[in-house]
Length: 572
Image (cartoon, rainbow, N blue to C red; front, side, top):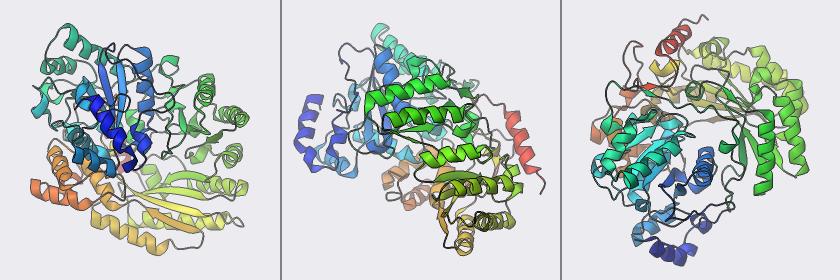
């Protein structure tokens, strides 16, 4: 079906679906480049709904880089809502890009960006809706089908998806994506070689893992973007959605990487080294975004925003700039040992929803195990300072299932919660305790660690539900089934591809959405494929070669082993 036909069918039936404006591609600052004069035609496919994907920072960055800085073209595609999915299937209309309403098959390449492993099956849905075969083997010799590749933090271990993507970009994409477009154009239009040979040529590039052409001796090195203060890569005129999205604001990225290296945190390890944006660069970007968008809220984004070297000065100047334009400035969660009185006063002024802090563990032993360099007195003092300055709620995040955990460590979370209530008196701030389940991640010191099974997690949660009862307390927790699934996918090998495909065929989509997630689909798929879920939760010998060891994220394997050994040898 041609784009003109798609456009007619869609516009004729738009009022029959929910939030129809999300399918029109008429947002503020949209770029519609001339199709015929563009070189490589690329579609950025975000494997989730529009209201999630439009807040994605990678989308905004790549949209600018390709459309403003090159002769190539980049359009967008998201997973439609359920009613639109049914409509497309019923009318046999292929999934299309928003800017041109062209079907995905019209593009030279499709670039998927994964923020979470829980959207893996959504990618298969996108291919299915696009009338595109799902596996590489079915597509690789068909030049009429686009090259399909993926990137993002959730595919730093690409093996579970290796059946479905022609290649993967490992690491930062700012400089790599333009190079990929150049190679595709040169191969297709200048050398006039096949898609098969184009993918083979791409497989020779640094930072690229192409499963069909991977040599056993090739180490794929992570791409690291260092030019963070270059205006060429700064988004100053972002796309602005015309409907309310989940994060209805623009995020200013303070720095990439994190100076605090918690042993469980994959993001801090795969985003080394730390790269800091200059204060004036950030202030100028914020000023431009406010001027070009009409956003009434800006937020600051990084793994540890309160560790930004000039954070107080930056917040003060940004707040003044935003107030002048009647724009709110919001803050992410803050690190406990940097939460000074001055920071608390600013936080109270800026954060409407209260203070969010992440001690991660209740006992000093486990905080030492994970390399969270804070003590209980710092936690208490930080929260008391926050309570003195505000009557707003205080959110605390803890993790259960960490290496070396015993019952006394769970009790320590309970004890700390009640100690906080007593310590902040006479303040009566609501205290929200959020319990998440530890998921071992590749490329961290804990990649060899065991993950709790379902029964163990449920036993621990039952303990907290019984013990954490108080009129000032609210307990929240992550669904154990979601954590189990995430654990299987993040440390999966090539065999997990069969599980993903089988689960999709069972009906698994939108697993990151609580109202859509159904673990039974995955259980049935595992049984059908003869895969034992618990096999992917066990601990590993640090001397064993892990499936993803051909990826080099810049952190030496011996460094990870040494950190793991330090964690295991921590004394109570």
